[in-house]
Length: 149
Ligand SMILES: [Zn+2]
Image (tube, rainbow, N blue to C red; front, side):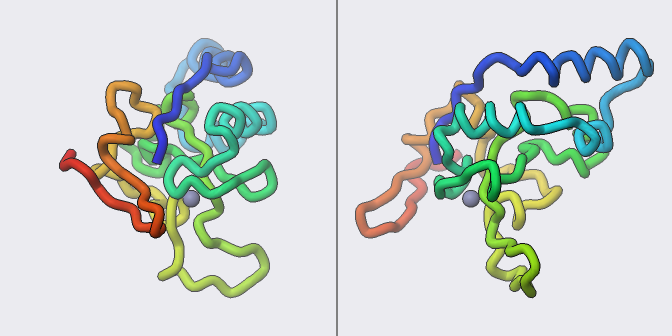
């Protein structure tokens, strides 16, 4: 995993949160994310992550990516963070194939995590943590945890 340096929050995302709070007078919900137009958001997430999945670091693009909510939007405790830019990351499709029978035991990344809270690793966008000190990748393809969290 790599540390992700978040850029400025996109204006359309910020404006949507302001609109929901001012015009509708309520907190953001998971449905607000589902209804938000994501073309600009997806492009920005891909760019700031260099086209890599935030978890497995495989190559991703606008056709095979999905947006991960590090603090899961499906969890009522975190639903109000559904449009918070620092909570949004680009991931691969996690082994899910469209139009095919999927073996859920092979799911990984966001697809496996779903609405669970990932409490064993910090948010890759948390600049106070250095992933190079937490996880290393060997030339043999093995991934190792270097330190305890
Ligand atoms: Zn992945």
